[in-house]
Amino acid sequence: MEMIINFPGGLRVDAYFGPFTVKTDQPGMNGEPAEAPTPFATFLASIGTCAGIYVLGFCKQRGLPTDGIRIIQRQYMNPYTGLVGKIKLEIQLPPEFPQKYHAALVRAANQCAVKKHFEDPPEFDVYTKVTEMSESEE
Image (cartoon, rainbow, N blue to C red; front, side, top):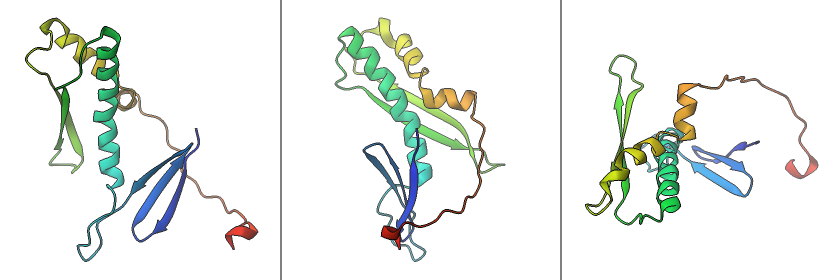
């Protein structure tokens, strides 16, 4: 898959892939609000939403209702590095959700592809390349 990352103005940086656009922004230097989440917030949201896809799939396969189910994600910073040191995903269930599926929901959420990439991170290769502008870009 290829993503095109561009700079539409201000502090915005957007990603385009297939028919989708993921917009990101930063708060302004003078406290102006951002028009979209920061790239890091979007990254963190991908963890919980990915787990949610697996929880949703588990429930749909078994004909279990998803009403009242939600995931609360909490990040805890490592005080020494300033980086996220721990992430907790709390799957909240309504009282009528069958107890026999609680542990299986946790196993399903743990199948999240984003989480698995933390366990076996990809190698990064960042480089520059000079390209010619097309006439329509000039």
